[in-house]
Length: 78
Image: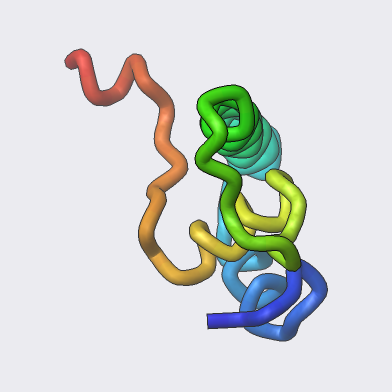
């Protein structure tokens, strides 16, 4: 997995996506979820280690690693 959102692995994975809008929207939603989760942990006093990438970079790295799949929700309902 890439260590940075600017790594070659991230760029290659993003280039393979057909619909760039859906990709961008999916990454944005995942970044928002990561940010909400981290803020919740901070409020609870369970701070995660320093040095983590920001939520946008984390979403891209998860996508590159294959731990998230960007797909339209309406496709899953059909």
